[in-house]
Structures are given as C-alpha cells and as structure tokens.
Image 1 (tube, one colour):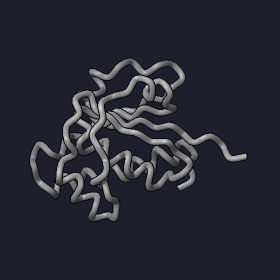
Image 2 (image 1 turned 90 degrees about the vertical axis):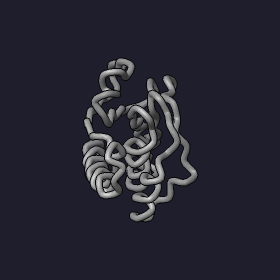
Image 3 (image 1 turned 45 degrees about the horizontal axis):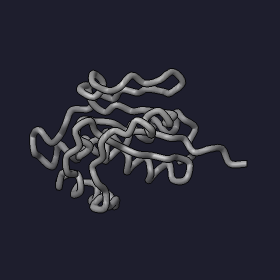
Length: 139
C-alpha cells in the first residue's frame, strides 16, 4: 500500500517569487508523493524574473497564479514552510501536529537583478531537496 502523500504549504508575503519556486521544485522532485501549494499574505502577480529563472531549469510557471493564504489548506497541511521573516512574524499560528519550518530567505526581487533571483532559486532547490529527504519522500 502506498503511503499518503505529504501535504506541504509554502508561504511568503507576495507569492510572486520564493514560494512559487519552492512549490515548483517540491512538485518536480516529490511528484506523486507530495501535494504542494504556495500562497502569500498579500498576493501579487508572479514576477517575470521568477518565470525566467525557472524556465532556465526547465520548469514552466507561466500557468501559475499568485494565491492568498487558504486556512483550509493551512490546517490540512503536514508541513508549513515560511520562506521569509515577515511571513514568520505575521503568519497564523501553526496548529499542534503540523511541522513548521522557517527558511528566512531574502526577497531577491528587491534588487531587480536576475543573478539574485538565480541564486535564490538554487538555494531554494537545495532546501526543498533537503526537506523532502527529511520527510522520507522519494526523490
């Protein structure tokens, strides 16, 4: 019997870069073993640099939309990953029994420099792989 997929929720403020990248990598590496969503407290359109750096690694995000945090999904998650300090401070309290992870990754879009976004993408990719391995998700 296959074990139930792990439900992961990636959160940041705007859901236009970091959490979108994390969601994409978790789906890419976790496949059928994960159910993944991302959201923001104040959603904005996905940034063009986000789309561009993910396309460079063969992941297409142009069909994605920025989403506001959904409390039903939040409380149904096994793991909640907060990608920035601001969301960690303003996020609803994670209920007992749900794993809460803080990554505190700076917003690369503040510099509006594609190199910063690439570095953030690569950092998030490594962190997602570590997270999935820690959850015993086959990669």
